[in-house]
Length: 184
Image 1 (spheres, one colour):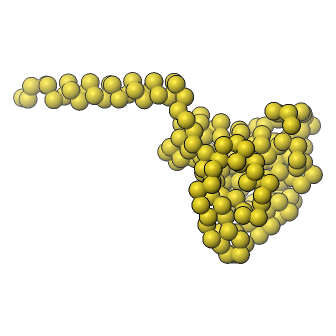
Image 2 (cartoon, rainbow, N blue to C red):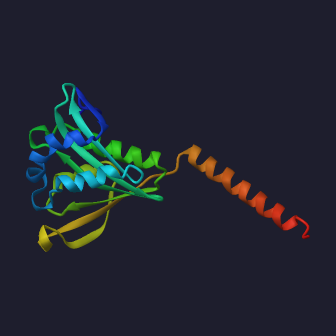
Image 3 (spheres, rainbow, N blue to C red):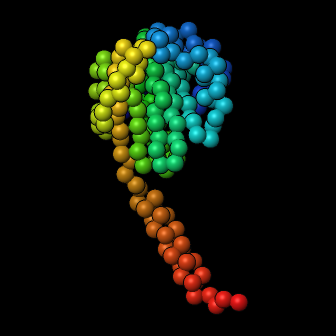
């Protein structure tokens, strides 16, 4: 499989994309499908959330993905590839882009839940460095299907470590100076 599927581009999701997405949402996710209003609420929060679409050169929607980042933990909220576009590397492309965004937002880990009966997605995530954390009983389909929880640790980049060390040094210096200052 090529590292990047040919003729596929990623970009931020826009409200206008919902017109193309919603007819497929039920087919992709069944009873777990999100509503249009759910997507509108998610897209409104650009501080913590990041949604992307994969599309063809002529702007045909192929898939979507969403990420939530709070502090040092990011969570992949959704990855969906339209049925006709599956098995072409688009899911992998979306996952890699979401993990890259988590890194950009300085997360140190990415979490996700995946249906226990979705072995293709589990294999995809494992191939991208995710390991199994555990199981959430009855997470999907009103309690009928368990979720497998997975985690991908994001090692610090050299620049992240240097930035943190510089902040720590500055903080120690500030604390030392404040304890050495004479009191009035």
